[in-house]
Image (cartoon, rainbow, N blue to C red; front, side, top):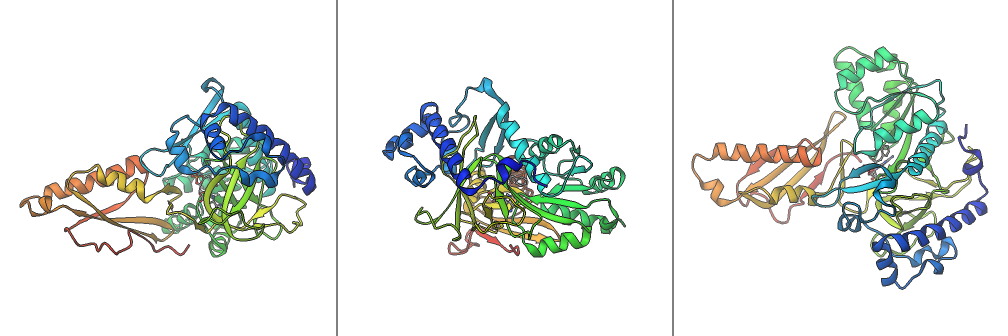
Length: 432
Ligand code: DLL
């Protein structure tokens, strides 16, 4: 089933023409309403008028996560706050998060894109959807929720956490669809097993998974333990949230990117050079229809490859392969994005610590774990009777990591000069 036949199956040349028209409109708009874009276009000596076709897009400068941070909180908004009906946020590279606004029409567009994605998975109004993506500033929960309502499905706004409670709802309400991170689903299966619930006996038939990297081995495992079909959903908050690209049921070898709303390019992350379609590189997105927070040539940091061969499902939009790598040092821990620089920002604020630390990310069962070792300074270390002091510092780090980053960490303080300067600061032992 296709939700929006007209736009999802447009001939390629019609899509390209639509993109070119929408691109010109959005460039005109941002140039005149967002100071940052005027400055950056002027600095690159390019005017909206110079962009006549999609191929010209490479003349425009990139937008980066740093630009978002520098314009925190609302500097990139293209409409006044009284036209904004929703704000979401995600982690920035340092202490502050990045904030995204949505007009009423943006929410409408976004819900439509999620509706497309759900319909692509064969979901209908007869389904009951257990939505275990986090509700709140994260775009997963509310994003999926509005799209589910759009297709008149019944939605359980479960949000994340508390596996036993989730299992009770799954048993009692009998949802047919689950939306969550892949690791959360596997965690539910493990907890279920430990308390005598076999998740295969639930009524679930489809799962929509995303917000973190996963591969076909994980898909196989989820499909086996739950007895469901598992599909991949992609998106990033900066661009709109989930619902930028969705896997269809044909072949399941990539996600269609909704090209009537986004232009996608692949670049060499080192040089910024645009790569031929089909080569692996960093994905760069331009929004074509977003009103509150348009983004021009945003460097996602996600490494993938575009698949241009026609798809048997009938959708004509280009597909992207699963995202398994990033071009930067962003980690995704239990679906939460975190940059090492954010951890550093927490550590430098705490007295008695050296800026020497090591993060080890691993998995216990299905769940990500983060162990943090930090050196204390000589003074704290040599102070006799300072065990209490050390415990206080450890607890403060754990609390700040939870409060500011939403990450639960195990923290261990170590003697000065324990960690070698040459040691990697981040060790990711997970399979993906
Ligand atoms: O994770 C939005 C989302 C919610 C997507 C629910 C899918 C489902 P952010 O928190 O801004 O937004 O994180 C975006 O997560 O740049 C990727 O690195 C990663 N990511 C998102 N979806 C996938 C996926 C949401 N299907 C960042 N596969 C992105 C691999 C994914 N990585």
